[in-house]
Amino acid sequence: MRVVEVNLGKRSYQIFVERGSIEHVGRCVADYGFRGRCFLITNETVGQIYARLVEQSLAEEGFTVKTIEVEDSERVKSLSAVEHLYREAYNFGLDRSSPVIALGGGVVGDLSGFMAATYMRGLPFFQVPTSLLAQVDSSVGGKVAVNYFVKNLIGCFYQPRAVIIDPATLDSLPAREFRAGMGEVIKYGVIWDAEFFGFLDTNSDKIKNLDPVSVEKIICRACEIKSEIVSRDEMDYGIRGILNLGHTFGHALEAAGGFEGIKHGEAVAAGICIAARISVMLGLLSEKDEASIKGLVKKYGLPFSIPGKINCDYLVEVMTKDKKNKGGLISVILPTTIGRVEYIELKPEEIGHLLRKTMFLNEG
Ligand SMILES: NC(=O)c1ccc[n+]([C@@H]2O[C@H](COP(=O)([O-])OP(=O)(O)OC[C@H]3O[C@@H](n4cnc5c(N)ncnc54)[C@H](O)[C@@H]3O)[C@@H](O)[C@H]2O)c1
Ligand SMILES: [Zn+2]
Image (cartoon, rainbow, N blue to C red; front, top):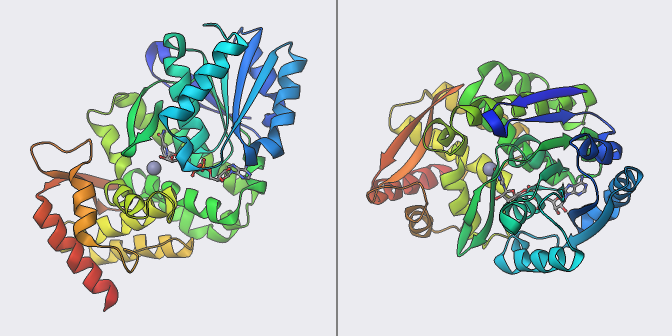
């Protein structure tokens, strides 16, 4: 088993990475001293494959488990779904020491975490992420949220007690979801670690074929990088912002698709390439580094430009509503070399102009 530490003072926790650990979730939660009732939140897809195993492991430790299967859709990150969970929690009789366990991808994690953070002012929360994106990103760092008009508008910071990652769960993950998760993995290479970027490039075949050693390596390295960044800036006032590379553009692309057309990790991959292109246009990144970034994104079968019919004005409109903007300017993270990024503020009209130029280049 490999353990990644997330150092956040009193809120510190560990990320356990081990094949087969899905069968030991109960023991892990019990090791934290919890007993009695617990809430297992999953979705219909993941629940069908893994819920029984997790329920059994919890029952073996003497827990009384209530499993809730939510709809398998981004739509479920909603206040009405949270309310449904509150109602179920109340009827089941959860108390402040009852653990809430999220079993699934980022959607289940974000929704369950928000419920756990707010019900009775906070219940102990455990993440058992099963998608690559959730294992390398969303289960770590404590951001929990639901969508409201725009993505993740209502949320808070709420750290889990532990994250239990079983890389073998990726065997059942649809290939497209694995690719999407690679969007976030590539992000870590671009923002932080040129050597890791090189590893992703050299070992792409092994990674795509789910070679256990390579997959475990990327999960652990991604968690280490995220943990390092989050421990320096838990509340996202400074350096944590670099984790948003590709996201300002990515979120706009997701919104343009009404949350359905494009997957988060795909949108991030395209967003990273758009950021790289804009960085080159502003003279901040070399064409060579841009080509490497785009090349790696392509290698993993991810989108590397703005999809055909999307309207640039609409993208800018979405970006102007981003929570991170200040004083009418749009904040974007741009790569300056592989392993380094910079934080830039641009006027909406400048972004619009650069995006149109980017799209024109795509067509050409
Ligand atoms: N909190 C954060 O810091 C953070 C960071 C990044 C993304 N997110 C959020 O995460 C969400 C995206 O997460 P996601 O990409 O995991 O999407 P998801 O939760 O929708 O999972 C993707 C799909 O894979 C299925 N799935 C998951 N694990 C599986 C498995 N092992 N076997 C078979 N099917 C499996 C799910 O049922 C779903 O259909 C977005 O809502 C995004 O906003 C949050
Ligand atoms: Zn993301």
